[in-house]
Length: 489
Ligand code: HEM
Image 1 (tube, rainbow, N blue to C red):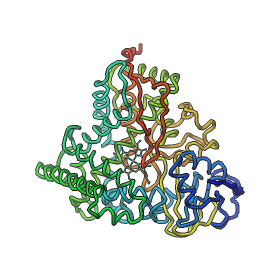
Image 2: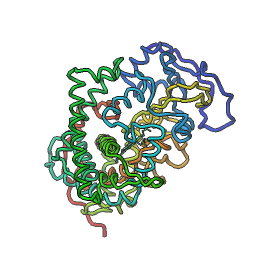
Image 3: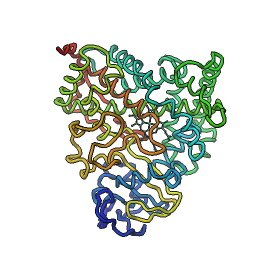
Image 4: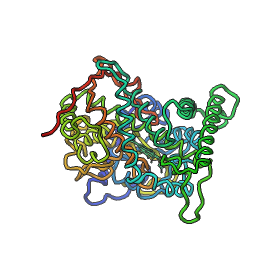
């Protein structure tokens, strides 16, 4: 792509100072080269490409003007406005297809997840979010703490000292087992897990087809790929509906998420959720809730493998606090360094690396008046590596989080609020953030108290930004058993 810099004279609104006059859409700086060159860059190296654009042009960059007006927005204040300010003016989904994350990701996902929280919009989303929120309150998560640590221990118990592993595959199985147990009360060898796996694979293939014009029509044709996807979805529907039936017959008073979904009542109308809606929500949580956490843990072990001093310090904290017992939810507040390791890893490798929104009406964005229909791209990858908030941004340094309150997703003290947003923000913020934080720290603690991992020398780990950010070829590492931790005096 030919890049001809156009200076971005307007200061970032997050830097304070008197507000600069509002500018028109034609003044947003950006590279020349047209939509095709941009599409090529975004397909080839979106992480590096977007980071370079932010550095060259400033916090608001015009990506394309035609066929869609699309902008990278890397100004924390404008991100806050877009995510927290209004769900009405900054809509998710329904983005014109073919360009943004919103267009190519949400559409194929909808084929699998229907009207679940992740893919629904407007009133459906608002009602469902209100119904589901109590299922993710801290008190509920407390009931899952043992499952997080127990399944992490059981996964690690299958490894041998000196064994070469694909740690990404191991951790993905582990988080799938956790969500299968907490959601459906079943183990990994159950039918539901098998059909979910096939449906996910077929849906990933459909996501690859989503860039083709006429995607929705193609998916209805009797072609091999779409046919396999439809069969996978039918199998999944059948198994989920059987599970729902079983729960209903049994009285649905279990404490797994499926039972809770079935027991949910609208506080105003007293109505329960229709079975199809329960299905969509259950699958949404299963899908949204395992690969993200697996990726967070995978990148954490990759980074620890690069920085043995950080790993040693984390191990020392685990030995001091846990000695040789399994971690429990009550330990979350006692493991500040382990917590900081996970946060710092989600800064450098955010499992959700970018999110799309589109403007439903004209709006001021980072000092520019942008028209209705504009697509906005907020990228965690870009903002989390912005040297204005993160000195020496590519360095893995959990010390940055010294003094930060332990917990979910907030930026360190003194920094703009949305300079760190691994879980998004506002009304569509990750509903599973407390779940993910507890699961992430407990799994990291449970595994790392007994194991350390050495990288395979000479193997380059390449981030692959699909819906989530995963290592393209997995994470080959060698597992080393650690001696039991010492007991503090
Ligand atoms: C480290 C792990 C995780 C990360 C980084 C993450 C990240 C995110 C982000 C950034 C969003 C917002 C997307 C947007 O606004 O466009 C989101 C939404 C969502 N997440 Fe997570 N997530 C994680 C784990 C989980 C878990 C464990 C669950 C469930 C158990 C979950 C369930 C959901 C759901 C249902 C939504 C849609 C919420 C809505 O639109 O109302 N996530 N997640």
